[in-house]
Length: 287
Length: 326
Image 1 (cartoon, each protein chain N blue to C red):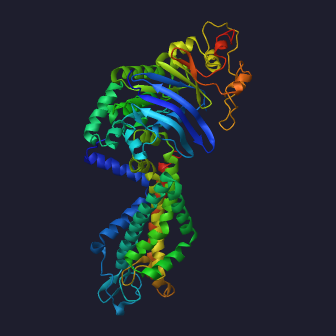
Image 2: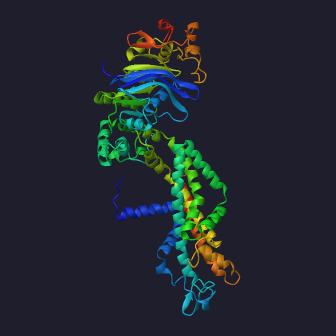
Image 3: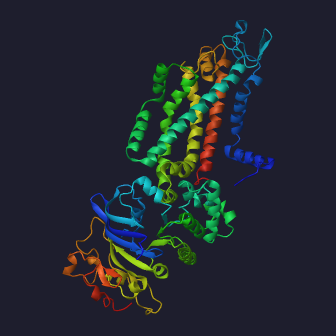
């Protein structure tokens, strides 16, 4: 199938994608665009403090700066911090999903196809990881590695890969029993070839659904870690950390906790709804 | 005499302590079509997988020799065995549609064994695949090669599978009930195709089936299998005319005939195939055999009853008169 990349085809492909992903994908798209173009959109420097303009209500102006969504406890523009915070939330979630997805899928496929002791070792490891509370594992790991952007991603990948491994394992078991895998082996395909060419493409849809749902979870996880002070460190703007600070001012400056919370809510909601629609679309029983 | 393409002797396959294949001997001469016939559970498919080196799970090869055109296979390493598959031995299966990867184009799948063995790059494998699709009688092969299996009919998918099995010109093709899932007209076309490809390429075929009609129209020689053993082996006409084993005789009697009286009930063999962990001592057919006697408690050897006609029965001489009608 060689589709020429004419405008018409691009248009119809986007239309098809939109049909699958649904209207809530526009929220995700909007947030992604905001994250990418943050320096162009943000009205102020997210880290420039203005102690005379602390805790200003949304829409007020202080010393020549308009605080559209108000200011935080150090007089930083909340809107700009939220805009830059989208970068942290989305990039941490994306990178941790990719990392845990690749690791988990690889191990799960190996366990499901090679069987024997490989299966025993990997799947018992999965059981062990799943039996440790995720937040506990995260706290221990951060305590060892120290907090920070890269470490948050590593922590999230470490706690979440077993989920992908479980699904990839089950899917691989069922696909490996398909007649076309038997035929590929009868044609002399080596096991890496069978896995990459015949099994992976047939389980990737299921993995994509898991990854989408995990993405929403990762956003929340990052916010949670940052809320606890174990995630991205100040002054880097993060929704979770801003939420945590805003908790102290809920009665006097409600906006500090509210707006990052609304953003988190919208992002996770849209991602989860896309995940639901994707799984419905890919499931032959409901299509 | 030339070297046989495939020579199996004394093949045994075990699952745990039980022998599911217990001493199978089959010889396939170059260019010959040998049919392996038997009921479900008689061990036909296991014999095939054993030749391919694809026994999985708890099954293991427990004895006997397999020789492919002079190359002994029983001590071949897994990696070397893999290099033989698709190159010197190929196999096709029933369920043609499910046997093709739903996400790969037909052309890519036909060329698969060339690419997998590094015999061709993707481009030349593609053009050879298109040629092969033409050879197996698929119209508009250039267009079809780009399609997915779901866009093809069952009969076409079986042609595609045959094309992918034969593209590397293997010496031996093992066909495991390739026509079972197809309707009768398509079945006839596929059989005709296999006959034609045998003429053109000289590939030997081991054809596994339970359909004696297919055997009669395709095979040169027939091996009848029962309970993990070969019970009779003969040229096809000889086997149909003078069966020397009661099981073969009764199998033939199950074929409905146009000239039998209208009210006569269809013949069936009483009982079912016993499980492999519950085989009777001696001749394994003795519990269902009308000729069985005390001698049958001893295992009968597979021995010549006539020129080129082997059977494993103590009472071969009585087989001809055992069913008065039919």
